[in-house]
Length: 314
Image 1 (tube, rainbow, N blue to C red):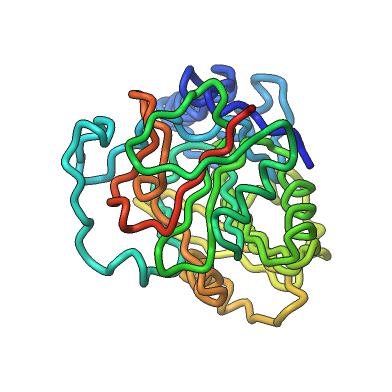
Image 2 (spheres, rainbow, N blue to C red):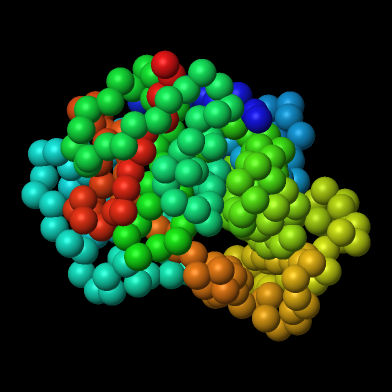
């Protein structure tokens, strides 16, 4: 398997350079608009790539992920203070045990999450086998040595799937091999903070069987029009305050056929894809994280999880 990356990288700052920051893209767009030029965000991203001397990738997932300290606050402005100093309360609405679909909509940074149709202990054991690692079941609020921590595997009560964050960009080979070794279904859910593209890939028994990728349409700027590897593809153009943007949706599957109309539903179709597998991709605040105070915690109570495991170096 691919090597594992130390979780403490997330606690001590991003490994991405300032050049990779989307802030540069924002200022390019702002500058062009100030002189009367209206451009699509996708073109400004292309210009950013040219200015810093890099090639804009088709699919790139940043090596860094969301901060390993407390996850970002939600849109309500809720306090992001480590949970150990907050009173834990059950979130309103549907119980987490019955939630399904794609809830992650607060993309904090580039990341790769892996959902495994197996319990947390089996998953943690299989992932830990890739190196000199060990697993330990944890209670929320327990401290962990951040320098040794590799990742956290959690399973929500009432769910057949376990979840962990993966740090290596070459996740395809890792997920393929893990699916083969565990002889089960895996869902890789990824987001690129550089391109703004989102990815859902389904693996069964070591084989990629279904994929949905979507984001701003770069085909015109990059001169890439070969979509033969995709069974279904479509674009959807929207107009927001005079700014026209086109999203591209790509889908392939060895399991089923879908129409362009179904694919053009975008996030709603992605949500239905997870529901097809009875799977749930939570918001970041629902997932156990390593907080700045050195404990692993979540905004859910302990009872919300069947189990939580830490994978650490021996």
